[in-house]
Image (cartoon, rainbow, N blue to C red):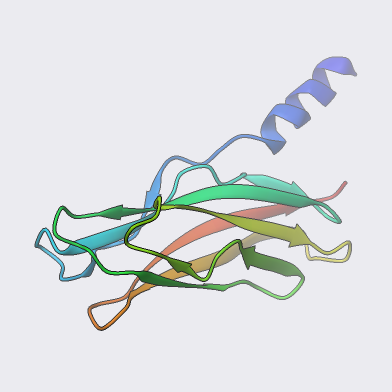
Length: 134
C-alpha cells in the first residue's frame, strides 16, 4: 500500500518538459520573444491549487513590454500574477491553477498568450493540466 501511495504522489508532481511558444515580436530576428512554461504540474487533484512558473525569453534586440493573457477551460481557474512583463523587469511570472471540486477528470488545455506592446506578432504556449480525483 505504501509503495502504491508513493507512486501516486510522485506521478502527481511529475513535470512536463520545457514548453516553448513559437517566436513573437519579429520572428526570425533578434527582435523576437518566446513564452516558456517549464514547470507545469502534470496532474492536479480536484479541489486543489497549484502554482507554476513561466517566463519570457527575449531576443537581444527585443525591448518591448509583453502583455499577458490566459485562457482556461471551465472548472479550472487560471490567474496570472501580472498582466504585463515590463522590458526592464525580470522575465519570470507565475500562474495559479485552481481546479474546482467538480472539474471533469482528464486532460485540459491552458493557453498563455504574450502580445508585444506597440505592435508585433503575438505568441502563445499551451500546456496540459491533468485533473485527477483526490
